[in-house]
Image (cartoon, rainbow, N blue to C red; front, side, top):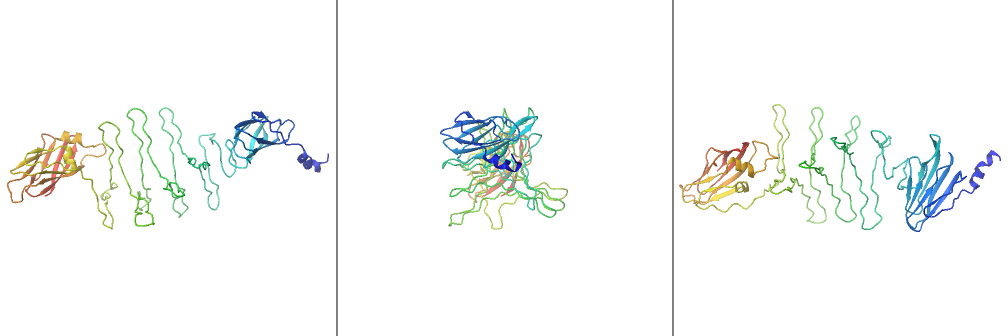
Length: 427
């Protein structure tokens, strides 16, 4: 045979292989090139036998879809099975020598197929596993660097959600920590800013936008704390200002007067244990350096935002009977009496204050304010109230008198365990 006739003879050879049916194996004997159709009537399987020699080619295509077909690849190198789930699905194998044995390697597929690794353009497989200490997926270097997009699969059923995309750090061994997940914007050029990191809930067709949830990991085991969530502005270089950490409610809708902006909520964790305290919310200005000032905490804005405070129902008026306040009454913020002569309003002890107020999130030298209201007539000059320290652990400094017809404001400060100082700050 003349060499110039080889391509024609190769193309005219009988390379189409009959479909062996469910659980069958294709007959590739003496087939340098094989075309293997698949026709199913239900969920089925097929098998491609190991190649006879190097240089063989085998293309499998889904002709008629009556149910998904799992095609097992015998003698595969980097591929073991492929699932065909739509008519028109196709993939090609080629045989090469691996350590002296002919092996099938994946050549191409006409779309993402479960079990078939894509070598160019995209990766779509049941799993991608590194073979060394790391697995790198890098966008192509170009005039504008190539993006990397990881997309969950689209749902084909009206009521089903699209496929999730999960980033999961590796499991630690014995006492080793679990692997971190780092999401970092790209490094800027010589004068370009660093790349932004955007985490955005999904955009719907005609429904509420998708939520973005950031949650610390749950503790596992006896008395193990939950994981921390920290939002920190970037560190500055030189004399520049550190990056802002901003928590902003969403922009309101424009369709009418009711589309107000979304609230920004910061809430301590709820307690699940019997009689246990909820988690605190701590707002603190940045630490100073040297003789500078601690960063301020600013409430409100240039539009004179009103500041709202929760107010528990005040304790019932103590009338004309001397009272010893409970911690709950002090924390509620307002204690009142209507005396007809001089009366005492006594604080709890320092230990009782410790037991009644959560300090897990509050350092020493912090405190809270409360008011004592004297409802006696202003002219009744003898009907005064006097804030009196509890039996132990409390010191009242300065004037403790609350005159008739007035309200005095006090600040209770914890200095150390079961030790409090109360200052009169107004009235």
